[in-house]
Image (cartoon, rainbow, N blue to C red; front, side):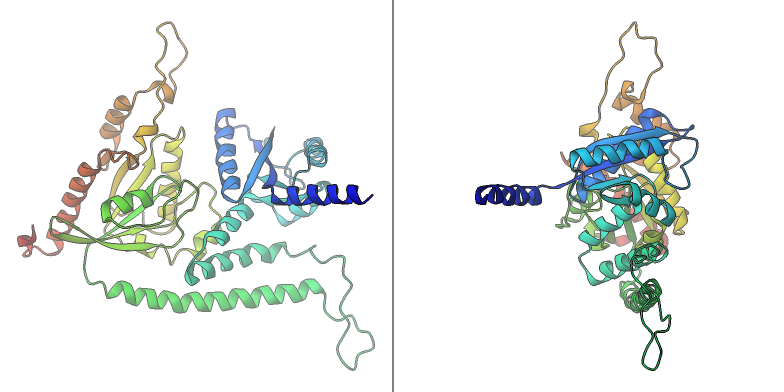
Length: 406
């Protein structure tokens, strides 16, 4: 009997040391292609990995629109529940933001934790926030996400008793207490962030009229690596999503021409609106920049959609009118598969060589662009040269009688 207890204890410890097991769930609408859905799930799996989940299974279902009650169909939800029971799944992650009603209904059917894409991204941001400013921003987004979802969390509790002098009055529900606490927290965080915003605005005004350049782009495209190469600094860079949350500003001097270079938080498809709102002040560096360096992962099979997501996010924060320098990074990881001579099927992105892609983008882009590999340091000298020319042009327009610097 004692031996069995010890074995069970060892198994429990071993299970606790293992990473959490997750299942991914997504729907495929009529306008979506299977390949595109798989790419979205690849990104969701990368998000899950960043949050320390190991994906063990994917479930997809073709539907015109999500089910308003349970997101997917009843049969598919039953299939997910059975798999989770049989395989000791810890968490089910949905590739969309679920409504409070959907979360409550799904939790009734599944034997494990249920989170949506927004909750997953918020968890990643909460774990990666380092400074007090970033932590306050993420906490604000988290509380704004939680507020409409508190209903149902305390339905198992009775009403609290009334205060002194009452005869067992109805009192206040636990959910009402929680809502009041969360609203107070939101108010406190907004006031705190407003104070910090004023301090940061003063800091930015003290930098003088130096030319400002900001790195923007989808998450995990290599912005921080490029920042380190250009500014010769040591900004944290990692092959995970949202490695950088805090805006980092460095003074860079190229051939006696000084300017400020900032590295900002990466964007992503379906970025929670709570995070966009709370991080708008952080993105003031983008709005106040004279030039945007838009970094794109050329090796990603869906890089054009990522590029469009960043453009839309820039428009959302009021920075769509800024001059842009497109930097196509990761040419070392570009995958090219030439077509066979007798292959009559339509060419795909993989069938286009890097040289052909370069020529097409150089021809059709309305902005200057460059193709580099930050990892292998290919094209970095040309990047510095082109960047110097653009900053010099902005500087000479601002200080026409100060051209002796260069």
